[in-house]
Image 1 (cartoon, rainbow, N blue to C red):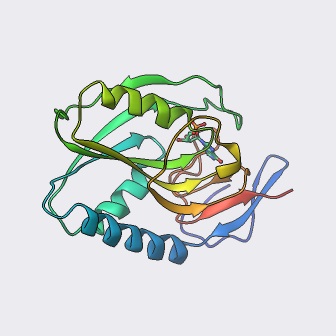
Image 2 (cartoon, rainbow, N blue to C red):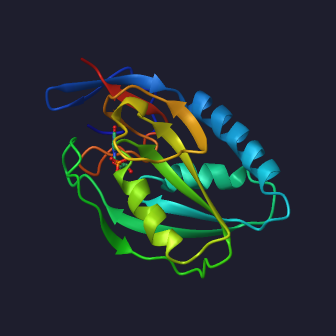
Length: 187
Ligand code: IMP
C-alpha cells in the first residue's frame, strides 16, 4: 500500500488482516508529554541516561527526549525481536551493545512495548552487571495480561489488551514503523 505514513487511514490491510485506528497521534503526544514531565521531575539533578531498545523504541524515544527538561544522556541497545512474525520467538539476542559507561549512573530503559517481559528482563540483567546507581523502565505500551516474567514497568504510556499493534515504531515484518499513530489488528 502506498502513502500510508502521512494519512489518517481508517483501515490498513496486510494480506487478509485488517488493522484499525487504536491510539491517535494526539493521544500519544499528550501522554508522552505527561511522561516527560513526570520523569524530568523525578530525575532533577541526576543526569540520567536514557537507553532505548532498538528498533521499536526509536519514535517514542525521540518524542520523549523532546519532553525531558533536565540534562540527560542517550544510548541504545539493539535486540533481535520477533523476526518477521506476530508471535514472539521466545528468544532474545543482543545485536548492538551500549557505548556509554553506565556504572553508578541512573538508567531509564525506554521500550516501545512490553509483551511477555522477556526483552526487559534480558536488558535489566545486562545493565545490572555494570552496577548502575539505579534502573527504571519506561514503556509506551504494556500488555499486562501477557507478562510472564517478573518485571516492573515504572513509567507506562498505555496499558493495552493482548492484541497485535503496529505503528509509531512498532512493526509487522519490519514495516509500518513510520505510522504516526497506533493501529490494532481487528478481529
Ligand atoms: P517481550 O520481550 O515479549 O516483552 O516483547 C517485546 C518486543 O516484542 C517489543 O520490543 C516488540 O519489538 C515486540 N512486540 C511485542 N508485541 C508487539 C506488537 O503488538 N506489535 C509489534 N511488536 C510487538
